[in-house]
Length: 257
Image (cartoon, rainbow, N blue to C red; front, side):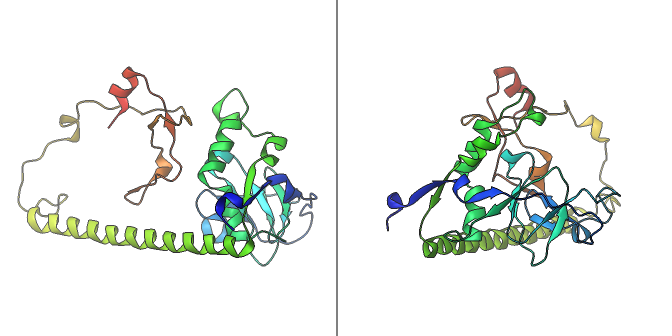
């Protein structure tokens, strides 16, 4: 079957709102949602307990259920992939998924694909950036390409291999960066100890101008990329879901690098 012959369904055709099951006096592992790693055990990700002391109102999330967080236009929605149920903040919405004709890996990739991300951003409603949300009927109307299961699995496997290659490439670049730093120290000495007695100056003497950057967000298709701190990690810039804003000339002169 060719790509243009793939069936397209509404997201609401494959998910339904899950009954709200609260933790009560039960004992469940606490789960957290992360922007890039999906749903994880809180105990493995964070050093301290971030959950409320009273967890009786926390929602039980079963394996395979879809959890949607905020902001959705930054891809905060993932499948609960652990073999056991866990609990999450009542702020999240939980959905049951019909996997009869749907592969989990493909489904999660489709929800984070460029078209889906653009759809979320264009449909948000609200007066301020941090309070904008996606109405449930609009979320359920998201178009979802549904190729045959074997094609879905093939797509997921291919993209997984690409992700592995990207990770390996980042590791290589990190090693090269360490080599450059080592070479720098070899040539000029440790900048903290300054064993070669180079002339020094305070950083303030070298900086012409400093500002706090931009606080507003945007999803302008033709806008300039405005990086956020979350996209500057471990010496790399993450361009997977950039914040794009149409800047005026004054803003360009002030903020562009």
